[in-house]
Length: 309
Image (cartoon, rainbow, N blue to C red):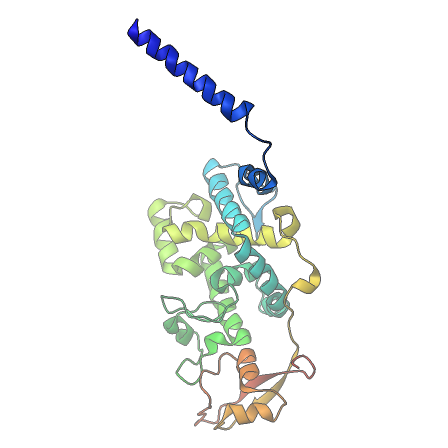
């Protein structure tokens, strides 16, 4: 009985406490209301994405009906859609570099979809990867030299858009001839022709979508496909911008140089620009001077007047 009385007493205390809290307190002030305001949980939403129909790379169909392929494609669409800051930056840079790449790819007989491979490789940033790959197409030093690019402390043609695109085209056409597939050619850009060939042979398959490849290569083509889908349909994936928000390609004209240049800062002044602007448009010039002991003919890009104030 004593225990029951204690329980009833406790209940009464709660009831009284409740009365004082809810029955006798003053109306809440604005300050209290702000403190008690519920979090705005509905202001941001993450949605599952509808799988696009007729996905293809360079005209080669993606077997999205395969559950493994579906999941891998879905992963890359989600990752590249909801990494919004990076996605918007890529959209902005694409406007600047795609107009340069597209005619070069056409000139060398490479499908236009490979512009998304270049975007996936470098993000169109002139930085060297931790593995030592450099330039828009992320060539390793040895590969670049093998295909005839000049690479040294003074000049690094991996950063030369026209020359590096020509080399990328040579590699991709060689891979396409080997595999008979642009999709496998793209995969080999990541894992190497030998690396892909070895795994296809061991697994007795002849398709990228049927092969078990290294983790990075497993995702590689799907990331390219995701970038293609998002870049071609940005508003569908929640990217909102005006045309004037995008970065633009600045037209240039070519100046031929077949001698040494002792000081590019002084050289730039002759064309009404400064050293920084010269290097922005010619990132393959790695030092402040050009040795050119062999009197090789180089072409330097100079921005047309009026674009830099």
